Amino acid sequence: MRPAFSIIFLTTLIGAGQGLFVAVYGIDLGARLGWVGPVPASFHVRACALSAAFLVAGLLASFFHLGRPSRGWRAIAMWRTSWLSREVIVLPLFTASVGIQAWTCAYFPGASGWTGLVALALCAALFLCTGMIYACLRFLQEWHTPLTVLNFVLLGLASGFTLAAAYAALAWQLLAAPLAAAALGLTLVACMLRAAILARNAALKQKSTTQSATGLTQQRVVQKSQGMTGGSFGTREFFHGRSAGFLRWAKWVFLAFAFAIPLLMVAAGLAAGRSGWFIPAFVAQYIGLLAERWFFLAQATHPQNLYYQAVS
Amino acid sequence: MSRQLALVIDLNVCVGCHACVTSCKSWNDQGSAGPLTDLNVYGKDPSGTFFNRVLTYEAGVYPDTETVHFPKSCLHCEDPPCVPVCPTGASYKRPEDGLVLVDYDKCIGCKYCAWACPYGVRELDPREKVIKKCTLCVDRIGDASLPESERKPACVMACPTHARLFGDIHDPSSEVSVAIRESGGYALMPEWETRPANHYLPKRPVR
Image (cartoon, chains in turn orange, green):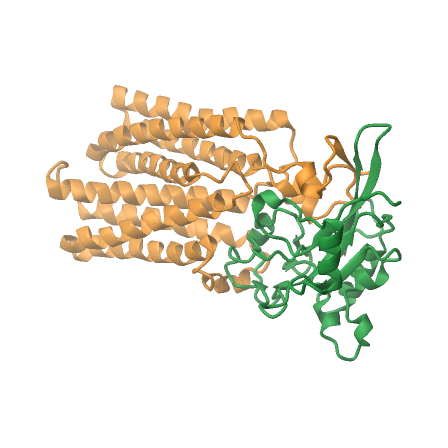
């Protein structure tokens, strides 16, 4: 597929925003259970505001993906069948719930455990919807696995917790180390899952062939002409347009920036007691996530490409 | 039982003349589905929105090769994967005749349905910014001002070798059902279980 930056920004921004919310809600629960010392309300309020900012930025980015953005409101119509429709409903609801959480933390701190629970449920629903948009397309075999949804969850949580650690480094230093430790663990698990998905996809055998696409049964069936010499939507939208070497390079870039570099920087920051290092760790991880999302979109092989092979 | 209108394309007689391509483009460019945008028409890198294209394949190994001309347009699947994914309901299948259509007033141009079509028959028109595809000339087949023999898709009317047949595949006595039954008509990419309504008749020896 041809990766669209509007989608890349949408999913990475909302993922980080969702992970940040989970981290902050975790702190809220931890404080109630006595696992974490008292945290000022302003920490929660501003963290929720930051999370909401990421969510709104992601939503704005998504409008650039639409041919007719002014009709975007219509997308809530088919929630019975379409994961995209469900996401379009859940994303604003979750964003609103994060805003409500910020307000509750400021004015009704006692209730934030409950309002946060509602928001957490919406957060989980949003992870599910976002992942299922891709995973439900059965002929995009690289995407059609529950691991796709899990990948969105883990990357969102990992980047969100790194963001939370970076935020804590600036807002409430005491929490920076525990959040960073959690981010470390999540990034490690996310890395293992992503490696497993890479291995799975490398071993994939495409179900569609030129024979199944045309019904011609000879062993050798080769396209001589795609019926046009100019390009078309079909020759642009479904292929990344880069070389195989570029794709391999992109894979190493995302593995380095989304996992290796943040792991090292967070570990070093924890070891040296320098919470300030969590900030560039998040920046590096976010760049890595942009690359990972690009690679994820580019790697999918669409069977329609069998119909666009040769120009003569 | 409800109707399912469809095309049957006879690969045995298609000569790759592209008359179906040009007649489709011409009819739909000016009709209710239009315009079908073309970009850089006189320039270096033209591209355009087409509903129907004719591909050419070579099958077999020399000296047993054959050239097959392969027209492809929306197959109006009985289980269309492009319909459930559409968030606005712009992509729908008409119950009365089985046509899969796009409501251009509802489409937001998110391209999700195009991702969901394994055959690559849905195109985003670059100027209109909505998804367009073969309508089986819904504006012709329902037009009472046309003589009944002409209430068929433009591509069927234009084909000089009668390689394109049009009818109801749920009616066992229709021309298309008979052709599928008697000449071994098949569906494309059966592995995805989309149950395309359009069928193709294989090349067969002429005795």
